[in-house]
Image 1 (cartoon, rainbow, N blue to C red):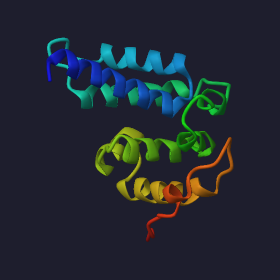
Image 2 (image 1 turned 90 degrees about the horizontal axis):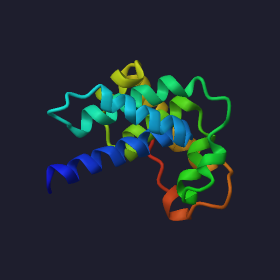
Image 3 (image 1 turned 30 degrees about the vertical axis):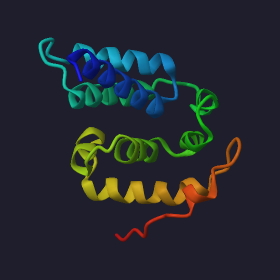
Image 4 (image 1 turned 90 degrees about the vertical axis):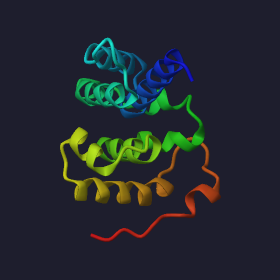
Length: 150
C-alpha cells in the first residue's frame, strides 16, 4: 500500500466517522477539513486525522438544527437505526464498534470515563435491536447482545 492509498483510506475513514456522528454531509466535510488542518503536513497517520475529525464533528454537531434521520435514509438499513440513538450513545457505538477505537481513546475523545463508555456502549447494543426505523434489520444481526455488568 502506498502513502497515497494510506491517505485516501484515512480521509475516507474520517469522513465516514464524522458523517455517522453528525448525520450531516456538510458538517462531516468541515470536520474532516478541521482534522486536516490539525495535522502535521509531513505526517498523516489515520488515528490523528480520525480523532481530530471526530472532535470537530462532535463540537459542530451541537449547532445542527436537523435530526440525522433524513441523511441516514440513504444508508444501508443496518445503519439507519443509529440515527435514533442518543448522540452520546451513537458516538460510543460508532467509535468502539464501527471504527474499533479502544475504550481509553474513546473516553478521551468524548471526555468520559472508560466505565461510562463501556456502559453507554452496552446500552446502545441493547437498544439498537428495539428501535424501529425504515425497514428491518436481519435477525441474525440483532440476536447477539452481550450481557453488560456495572
